[in-house]
Amino acid sequence: MKNTALTAVHESLGAKIVPFAGYNMPVQYE
Image 1 (cartoon, rainbow, N blue to C red):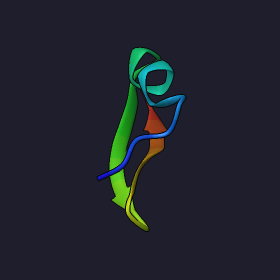
Image 2: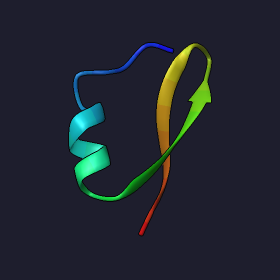
Image 3: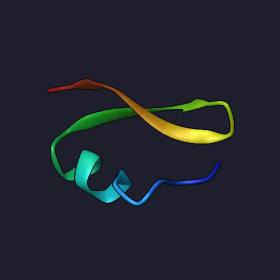
């Protein structure tokens, strides 16, 4: 899967990451 430039930011904010259209997409935050 590809990551966007903001993937690390989303992960640090507690995002749940799921694959979508070839990219890792944040869908839910804690």
